Length: 342
Image (cartoon, rainbow, N blue to C red; front, side, top):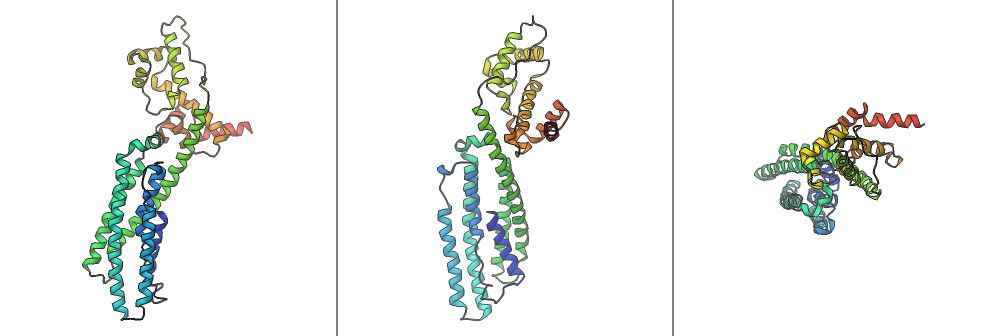
């Protein structure tokens, strides 16, 4: 998708700068790259959501049409290059490409709407990806792309109203906005694809671990504490089932899992761990993150993927909690331990 948008913008710049006018009639060749942008985005989306087998592959329909459109334009150039004046040919071809662009706009909008429908209404098909990514960046991308489509409609309306003559400044906002899309999708797509890959690998490693406890349960010095036995059971349950790796795991969730009231649970954890439930479970997350940071397997992994797979719901939350518990940032902790080991 990034490539097709970039080629379309580059082609528009070439034509605007008159770089190839009257050289092998290249003024007439306007390859409809825009026709493929939406199908490529759809393909990216279903691959990212990992629902390739559940959706129709639109590219196999759009690519042949794209080839036909290119052949039709080249044929027009070859057949018409020796008939009529240059102005007449310019007008006919501009009218043809405008109709072609209108068809591209309508088909792209259909694919765009269908892509949003898949994202919004097919969550049952990609539940797994939601455990790695809340897809907020993709929803924001849809908002931006919707605005771009409005600019495209506006530019095309102006083009038709001017009867395909004159320089069209109405396309400037469209070119700028599509350039922004190239940056956002390029940066965000690469970033989140890397995070997804790393988090999947980390989670596979966790799932392969045995169910042994990471640490011995924290015990209160008051051996006569009537809640101590309950705390050992609670602590073992959280550690054995690695509940601390779930970002949204709350005291209410724990209460449902082990059938003990939230107020009683809070009292048990406070009396035995000497900290609130949030501090208690965050400490487990920090300890897990330390193991990941020091594990050579994850040497090249991003701090964000390690924090998210340790149970934190955002990179900023990971940094704040980690620094509170250790007195340094995750990167500083990793570097300091690496230096000491060397």
